[in-house]
Length: 244
Image 1 (spheres, rainbow, N blue to C red):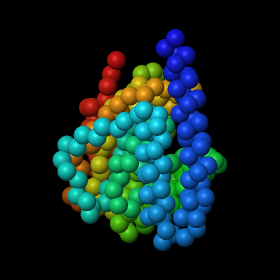
Image 2 (tube, rainbow, N blue to C red):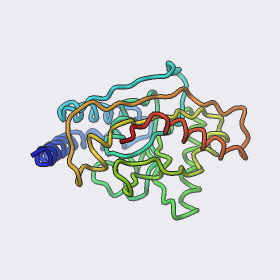
Image 3 (cartoon, one colour):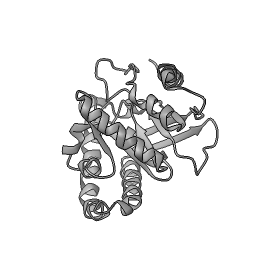
């Protein structure tokens, strides 16, 4: 019975996302036409995320280790176990921001409009693609734009409940090179509400806890210390994750 209810909730959630994606799409299309309108594009996806999560009965509870500087831009680094994670970072991020994600997202009927404009798609199997992606991200960071990224490189499906897997290096070299603080984020239990897209175990309403750690500043670090920074961020995020 519980399994049936969870799959019914998934269908309901998908219908909500579909309906509001159709309603928002003309606005997304217009806001994506010119870079100077990208701020509006981001606000639209924040509203979209809030509406869909509220109607699905999903609440996000944010706990901050320290208050964030409202004028500081960051590299937001979070673990990734659920499609809810994108909503979470959209709602959490402040100021101007963009995502970096896998190249396949360019073909997504909803997310594609972002990854062909404000966001950055990267094919991690291609060194040229990765170089161009991180070059663009570096330019955006230099212009005061925050970067939102899942350093695991995608949702891992080897374990349920999920386990944090080793991070990719590029993010941490970029943080040191551009002297931008890294903000570790532990998305504690999104997998319990919806693992990946919910297709295997369904979804359910509930409270998703997100712990925002204090920023790790990088001005004092050298490029050769990127592995050290990567390990620090990994251990910080992992310290708050739920294990069952």
